[in-house]
Amino acid sequence: MIEVRNASLVYDDHGRQVFACHDLTLELKDGEFLGILGPSGSGKSSLLYLMCGLKTPTSGEVAYRGRTLSSMSEDERAELRLRQFGFVFQYPYLLGYLSALENVLVGTPTNGEAKKSGISSPWTNGWATEPAARELLTGLGLGDKLHRMPFELSGGEKQRVCIARALLGGREVVFADEPTANLDHVNGVAVVETLVANRGSGSLVMVTHDPTMLEKADRVVTISDGRLAASL
Image (cartoon, rainbow, N blue to C red):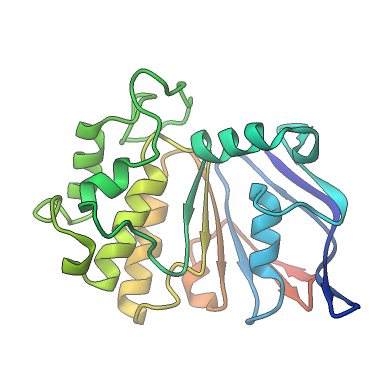
């Protein structure tokens, strides 16, 4: 589904070139849970951002279903991220003036504007609807907190709201960047299990420094100093 071909990402640090990613080649298959493992600063988050089109490679290319992301307009890439990709980040980014339910629905294509995703998921028939959002949040243990504001939720609950937002609509890929970093081990495991159990037939790409969070992954690649070190 996604191919990374000899991709590098270089930053300029006061005239010095710094490789966040160096000549990486990797592919993501349909329905695969791919884990990206590495210590802080290894380049694993940069690789995730290249895969989803949030960053553009300095050299090499990234392709989605055979079409390079660089050949798409910015609007096309934004449309891809909106309709086909879901995101869960290290910090649970929620809008403070919206309820848990509203945060799940905000920015998600709904009845009149969404396209059928084709992804088998218990939370969509191809459309992202409020009933589906309610059902998803209830399945994640937040049925009694649909109308709670973010300041009324714990860290783990906020992260579950973000997971619901990423899953709603049946995304082809959910990208999770250190989603358990700010949680204790028990809640971290629960978050990963929630992602795995509710992604339907979609793919999951998860970045983490903790190998215990990738026990359910189909494949784990290790990155060090911007280079792929191993694949398990």
